[in-house]
Length: 195
Image (cartoon, rainbow, N blue to C red; front, side, top):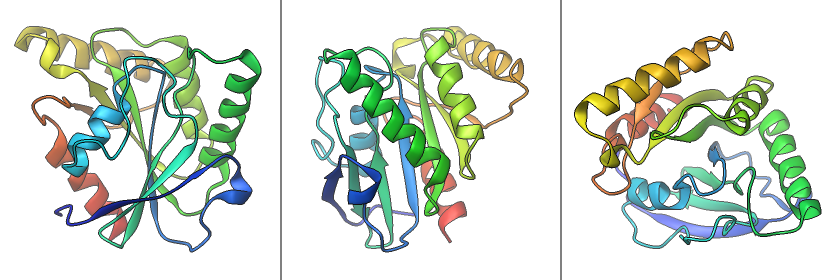
């Protein structure tokens, strides 16, 4: 699969305002500041289609991008820390939870985890949440370029072990928004589940 076209369609602030055409969707979710927007840009081969920022919490809506006129890539707000009021964070998490649990068009949830750190409580919450829906979970370890070869394998093994302790076995892919590592595997999952 090649990404031939990618266009921003809308940012939704509630389930009622989301597109309702039944087009298949893939979603990217992770805790704040995990590198989600940068990885989406690399995956799509576009520089700034998803807005990046050094400030956690830049993505504040559920953003829908139409890809190849065939499916939506959905960029979800970050879980956890962001420089917004607790009430706003709680509303985002309620919106994200409802989307992941009940969105019928959702086929894959790519859960981004920073490869440099062990599983956090927020990561575990997201994994449990994805397990409550029908979409296929795929774990993407971000910032793989910041680790040495030995550290990369150690990180993959530690994350897999942490996930296995939750009785889960999603695929785990090491990625990098800097060097493109993992892009072909992500495209492979998208292609296999949207055909």
